[in-house]
Amino acid sequence: MITKGKSEISGDIRRILLVQLGDIGDVVLSFPCILALRERFPRADIFVAVREKAAELIEDCPWATDVIAIKTGKGTRYQKDFFCWLRKQHFDLAVDLRTGTRGAILAFLSRAGQRVGFNDQGGPFWRKWVFTHLAAPYERPDKHMAETYTNLMGEYQILSSRAWPEIHVPDYKQEMAKRLFDSESIPPVPSIIAVQPFSLWRYKEWSTEKYSRLIRRINTEFNLTVIIVGSPDEMERAEQIKNNCGAGVYNIAGKTSLGVLSAVLKTCRLFIGGDSGGMHIAAGVGTPTITIFGPSSSSDWAPRGSNHQVVKKDYPCLPCHQKGCDGNGSSRCLEELTVDEVFFAVSTQMERK
Image (cartoon, rainbow, N blue to C red; front, side, top):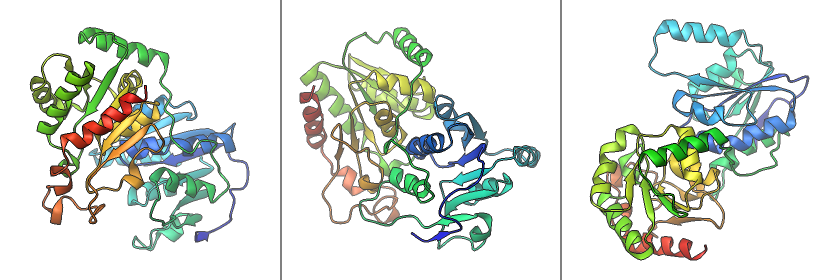
């Protein structure tokens, strides 16, 4: 790994800014980095800057002192006030876990004396002046994004005792999940399967018709309760799946915050879904997962460990990282993935209990 600056962070570090402006999955995969900072600097105040939609995950993180929710779409006045506030925080160390422009600007404007980031060879030339410690990400075929993030920290002797994310769910969030189940008349059975059929990107989604067939088969074979989770924008699509499946299926898409979703998934026996934030949250709270992958890389993103399975086609073109075949928004590797293939993984997981 190519590095710029000293090989270790030096001096009295009292206030730390960790910047992660990726999607929800990126934020979850950054939890080992927050723990690494806490273990390396046990008395420091650690502030984590994330997009507003992911702020609740950090609010519940026991290793973070506070969260800085970055709002998008705000006017010039808000941006000016925010950056003025940031400059007054007197951070000693800033770490940016991505290569985007905005995270680099946040790190620079923090006025931290030591600023750690990734070198982006295809990015702007000025990154070498923004960061005092600059490292190129590891490149290897089986890399995982969680490892990529912790490798950046480890390059400067900031090491985590846990390699994979663990999400803490406070008791009051578990109580909120219980009240939600009661309000939706979800029976208090010992085995619930959560299904998240949707993604931010349609080219990563298995068809809703196949999800409906899979859920009906789960009900027939195992007689378990199934809950469909998702965002408010996905509520209507989730309702269509529910209506196609009959009794024992409940739609709670759009009815949970991220923190309550963590508590909901913690109660479940199994999570089934595609490459989305839900699979990371489920794995983070200790729930076994079955994830359906298409053009994106399961070795980069899928949860690791014996409790987690990936279902995908064995095509030589995968992962292609394309937005559908030839960029057309439709992924043949997902269209040709059968219900039988996914159900076999479900059966395998059910036999483990």
